Length: 257
Image (cartoon, rainbow, N blue to C red; front, side, top):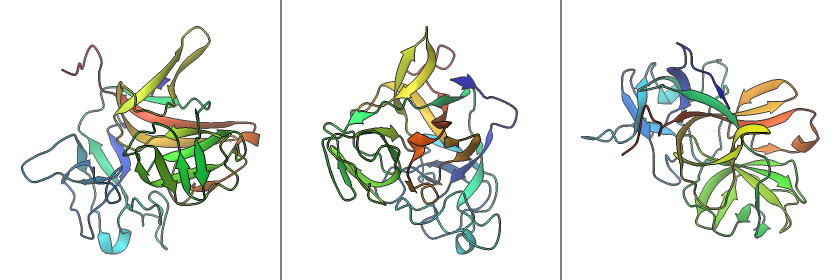
């Protein structure tokens, strides 16, 4: 884990969902919570409430030009979808608070797969509401494959692209959704820095994820549900990591009641 704070970290590009309409600069945004619609992306705050507000939109979200960040993962969030280099549904958002941002690697051990068939992956005790996660196969047949999760339920989830050879002997790492707030810390202070661990059940470590990255042989990119939904052979790279940018939300200086 390393702290990455700077005067620029309050402004961050995040996926926006306008339900088929424009969202104007200056609107307060919150994380969506409806599976299959806006879970894992930003939307306008609800009327009369700002539950878990993330930040203020710093530029126009023009639906006719940019489209919406779809949970189905059928279009890019962060990469161009047309001729314009700014033509995508991730927009600059000024964070409400950025008191401590850290970049932290996901541990690549993973959790055992119970069964799999086509796009459905079953893990005993798997937490619900992890739409827009990524799954990385870390062991067994299918090792090195990365897939995007479009739907989830307690005990199983589906990916937009099938794992080609994932079997019951496989292990998967959950790269959790943007704005997820409960994690499992892997602590090995004497030998390696703190990492994000994978268990089937939801964790209890309090933080909020604002970015997800993939590192491949010196190139680090923001994970995109379309661009990175069908990767394979990642375990063969000389340098590979999956990372999250998180804000620690329960600390001595910012305690949660």
